[in-house]
Length: 203
Image (cartoon, rainbow, N blue to C red; front, side, top):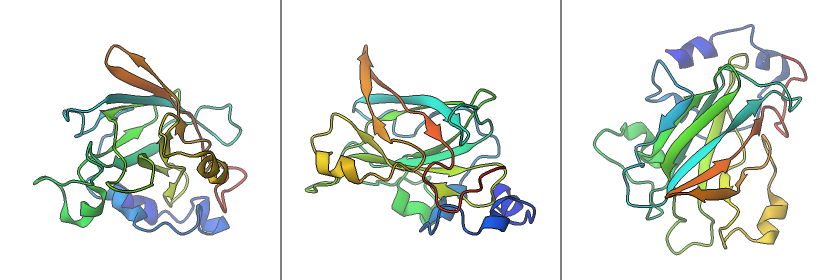
């Protein structure tokens, strides 16, 4: 219901500037299974896996990088501890490509969000670094857009050459974590519209 409401709002900012974020293959997947009420804190379905527990937390800011942005939906999905987008019986077959480790948070009145999940593994027999796919749905823009994948600063697969090529959509997605007890904690702030094509200068 949220998806169709957003898509039919003819007064949103992106109607005036074109396709915010540019092409986004399967971007609509974020709406499949989206709960009606989304909290600022989410625990993913992958949390029970026997892997490294991970907390990603931070603030979502407006384009000025200073003003917190409330009510912004952040959708995420990632591989399991074996590097596979695994499924389960509860997974909608339309989003099988995303796997069952997926979820949503909505920034609170101070722009804060937190995701508890298990640290994903890289694809098997691959040179691609482990990563988490995030995308954004702002309340005043009718189209979702993706931001830089969340990757791990301590991942040996994340080479210096790869780091130089990161587009920094929404800011850096490199997670620099520290460990408290058995939990890895990474603070990752997001700047809406930063390096996002066709993003409106004012909302």
